[in-house]
Image 1 (cartoon, rainbow, N blue to C red):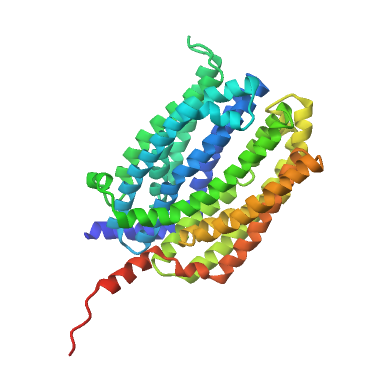
Image 2: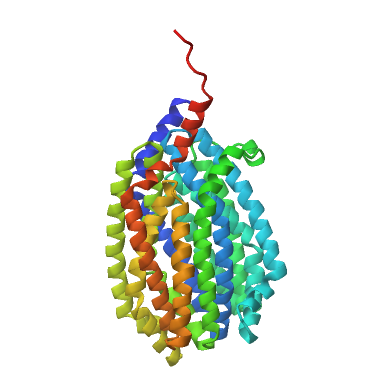
Length: 470
């Protein structure tokens, strides 16, 4: 390895160990990503509340597809972080190339599924009437282009793991600007173009992702210290793919389980009526800004933990996670209280329907219970994955989300007739149950036995010949 590469790697490692420098660009990037969803909701609300409900239902399914794509993107990011921490940057580059190829293949399969089966998926959610028409149009266009998001996930995760979080934030800013312009032109029909409504929002999403993807490819070759060679895309390594999938599959399965539970809750809501569906979409849009800072801290902490584990510094990883959880929890409480205080005018930005605003205000009042538990989960679960301990959150998620939250939600909604309030309470119960379990899992330090780089060392030790007898 040449001197310049070693110097670059050292500089990146030092940069990555500073949580604030990592976190604030991630925070802004996530904010911009969520802003794009809110802009869609705000602009589409000018079409109708049914249009908002349709886009919300479609996005529930699209969100699961994006989580499937994170099997490879997140798994690769964790493997890359540990290899960077152990100074094996050539291996990190090969992992990146393999991950991009795999994500593209999975993305093309998912795009085909949305184009062929999107309408059937929505009907399974009991989506009907005008809402179904809007949702089908949206899912065909955005879902059909999901392979673009597949490549973006792999590229953005790798660039962040190398410490270049400001660069990914700038690309996200550009994507949002393009998306807002596209919405303005295509939804409302300006500059001589037809007013396409929901279809316009979907087309704008796909076009902004396409431009963003081209920039991310350019950025990866611009900032990474070791170039991803063409052969890394073509020749897939069984060793690296197994490591990616070992982390990625459990991580995505836990997230997919969560989203599937949300889909079932969406099914519950369809029986409560169109107003309840629109209310849930508006409330969820506002709620995303409550745990935004926690997500940024969780992602930044995971990058640091991966480097610490790769460089065999478990005590630093242990204390970093506990401190990050405290900061994230404090920030969540402050942001949540502000949202609760201004919840009525915030809902009024999206709709003038008094019934929707009243119902939305009720469920947002309960966000203090839900979001505090979610915050602890975000930070600690991301850190467990980064340390290689990816299966434990899956097992606990199945028990808490599937076996407790869904039945509890059914009882609260349909037996006790609490409506949307019952769904919020059921989700809060799940978040706090898992938060307590994850906290004690981290305190147990069982995650120290799951390092991916240590596996290479053990394999080399097994293959090494015994020293000759003296």
